[in-house]
Image: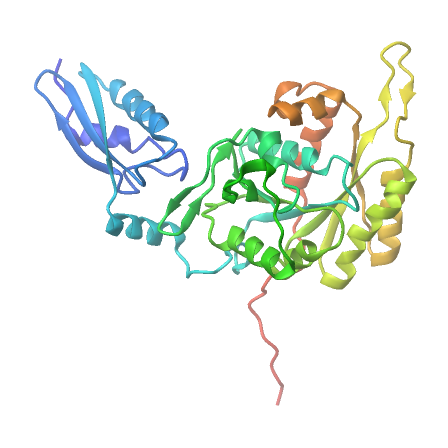
Length: 380
């Protein structure tokens, strides 16, 4: 059997995507050399972006599998090298395609849907809902990013089991991925780990959010979710300023007292000119495991109450997007890094989360925050 040509090996490598950038390694200039021996043994040398690349094993495995699939290959040896400063600078320029400090999601023509998940207070399951929605959207085949904007109380890394730090390429931050979702959080930038507090005033929070949006290479996202801190503080205002096209999704529980607080998170939209996509009621009623009757551990009607009050305050219809039944597995999944939509997709809560993810992806976009490319003119 004839051995494969160098062109055939190159074509095989063109099917190998870098696990962080999700583009072919041939397109990114990561293939240093290819040698095909007379006995069919193939040696491939691949450039890593940095010497400590956390995905090096994945790259080796993908390259090996792609080349081994060629007819006539008797063995594959993958060696690793590291890009020079000049090569990293070229890669950065190729990936960004825009100037420094620019937020790609605000550019005219951006098709990324941006949802800011908000709540009036903590403890309503907002972060768990956000993480599960992100994973469910990725399961639908979408390119999804999740920004943990709760700088003080970040919890997304635990919920999604994000253990790898981001890779730095010439000042550009390559976010780690978990369950198909690109994730960035303040946790990765704290030398003291999870126990180290963040003691910042408003301007520092704004700067951190801006950096997460402009310095992180998110790629071509279909959806970006932001897990906002509870309340109506600095981050909520900075989100509206930096991402005027973002839509708010308000999470509450059925308890009327919680609903009263949740309304405030939504009425911010009246001042920031954002759209409220809708309300999600978490910890809703669930059937009794013995008699089947609905159990209302946290009361009833909170989601509908928030939707009605927001509709009246904003002068536009704000729908209840869905009600997620109370499920202990949702909390357990957040503790062990296994989102419910993956560990128990057929549970009542899992089905509702997946339905919500699909609905949010299909909602028509409004014009809030979008540049129409027109300017006023004066008629003679």
